[in-house]
Each structure stands twice: as C-alpha cells, then as structure tokens.
Image (cartoon, rainbow, N blue to C red; front, side, top):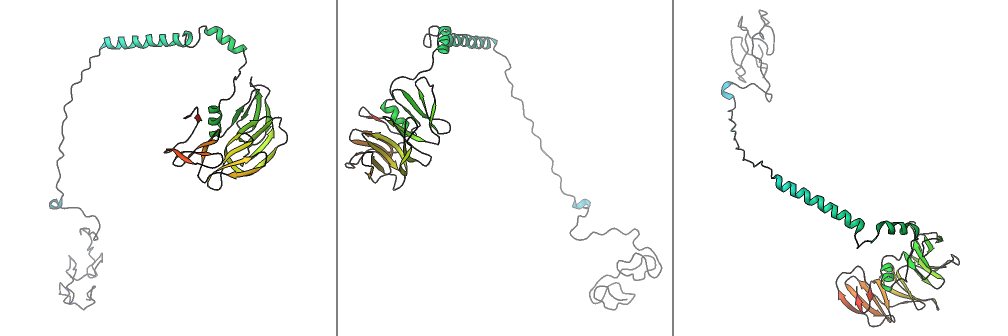
Length: 312
C-alpha cells in the first residue's frame, strides 16, 4: 500500500510508515490495511466507522475528562444583621409642626390682602386701579438716561412723550398715559436720543440717523457703526466700532467728526468737560478735548454711571 502522508510504499504487514512514522489503520475485522477516512474495509466490507469514537478537530471544544474538570469554587455568603430602627412616631412634634404651618399660612394671607404696608383698603384701591389710567411722571434722571444708553438705549422720555423700541425694534411714540401710539421708524433701532423736535437713533446697521419726532425728514448722519450714543450741547459722543473702538465726537453744527482717544471705550458718561468710560482694564476719564486721559480704577467693569461726584 502507499502511505497517505509521504506517498512511500509500505508493506501490508507494517503498522507504521518507515519514512514518516504515520500509523497504518487496519480493519478491526480482517486486519487488512484500510485507506484513511474510509467508512468500509475494501477487503471484507466491514463498517470500520461503527463504534468508533468521534474525533474533534484541533481548536474546537472537546468534553473534559473527569481529571480535567475545573475546580469548583464554593461561594461564600455573608449574612448581614439588620440594624434595629426606632419606628416610634412622635405625634406631638407632628401636631405642633402642622399647627405652626397653618398659623403661618393664615397670617401670610391676612398680611397680603389687608396689610397696611401694601394698602389700607384693598377693595377700594383695586376699584381705583381699574378706573384710573396708567401714567408715568417726572423727567428721566441722568442716571436712568445713562443706564439706558449703556443697555442699548431702547427708550427715551421727554416732558410730553415716551419713545420706545417695540418687540420688533421699531420706534414707537406715545403719551404719558401710554396711549396715542404712533410708529416713527419701521426698522430695528437703538440708542434713542431726543433733542427738541429731532429724534436721533442708530438703525439696524448701527449707523447714526435722525428723524423728526413726527416721523419726517429721515436721514443718515454717519454711515459707520456707532455705540453708546450721548448727545450734549450740539455734539454727539459715541464709540466707533472700527479703529480700536475709540471715542469720537460729531459736531452737529459743522458736521465734523473728531477722534479723541486711542483706547477701547465703553459705557460713556459725559459730565461737564469730562468723559468717563470703561475699558478692558478699568475705569478711565478724559477731557472732551481729548486731553488728560487717566485711569481711575483698575479691574473689569461692565457698566458705569457717574453722578454727584460718585461712580456707581
């Protein structure tokens, strides 16, 4: 026969190949060599696979013998002892707490609806509020005006009218009773200032504009983005967005624009002959002629109001 592994001729009475040592399979019935993998003997026809133990390819799962069984580990269980809890309820404490809450609620109700700090006659005042129109009195103070300008200047109050930017940013005028509404400018606006019969503002591009308080003669004064617009004595003070965000002055009589500093400037306050403003590193002041710039306070400040020789 021929060895199936090395193809060497092997005698029929040999049990192993003399060249490669491969074991020669034989028929369990007649003892003759059989071809590897054959199901029946070619000499006697016996089924050589019957009763043969199934072999497993290397790398696949094979059942373990008893001696190969893994060692089982006994799981240890630990019993925790319950900690005794005092379930006794102190009814006296609960009753007192509920009583205190009820009394506090009653007193709050009485104070809110009948307290002297709010009104002496709640029903009477409610009826008066229904009949009397809402009014806004007095002139806008300097601190209110500057605070408004520092927050984009969306309102302005004169002796007889109120000018305000509505939800769309449009400028609307109304009387002190918040009636007789009239739209002056139909575009997004900021930094409202009223001088006589002229309304100054910045448009959607932050260009400086003017229009009459009746909504006529609208025009652009300066086609550059400006912020913190303050008008005083025929001059407009503002921060110009370009050129390092410095302070500029626009003369309404000569139509001339003048730069007065080189520093980033925000929250302008024009007081007499001085301009107070914030910068990246503190609070400064400078003369309206551009002279004598000095730092007053160091630090980060996000708003500024100068009034009565005090900085707020």
